[in-house]
Length: 245
Image (cartoon, rainbow, N blue to C red; front, side, top):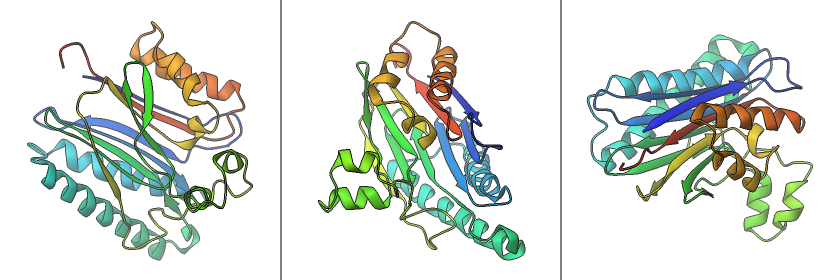
């Protein structure tokens, strides 16, 4: 398995509040994490880095993440501990009050693949050249679509499209959605909404299906999203299975 991750400020924002990382533990199991921070006084990047650094530092020192049930418990426990750490930070630094972050993660072992998410960063699997979204956005408009009050088309351009119903730093305790995914896939893509707001699924697929190297594909996705406006920070983590895996 090959992984690559990258983050870019975009064309409009003055600083990058996203954090992203991909690491392996001592037995070669993978963790990828993307977090999209929010809040003034650069507090968003503090929140996202607390989560990404906290999860990856704990994971990479593990001998193994263990059975699937252990991995689910590990996700829930550690995400809530890091959520507590965000609340503690805002208590110590009142000017950062209101800071928070989304989170999307994936754990990949030989036996299973798990996704976890809070907020509106996205997790996809790649199968036979097609992207399939695994995670569900915790946004106001998504809730209105589910209840039939908005169509998907109306939600696309809704003025409150970015209003989150769930985020780390906003809810305590925080509820993490966890998804169990078939290991028979070709790759995994995690990203902040800076990518999915700029490029359609088919536009992303076209880049991923090109003959470029793994790194070149991800860099091209960043470049294309910036060419289309780059209105937000963009972060991507990608895992590609190699033949026989």
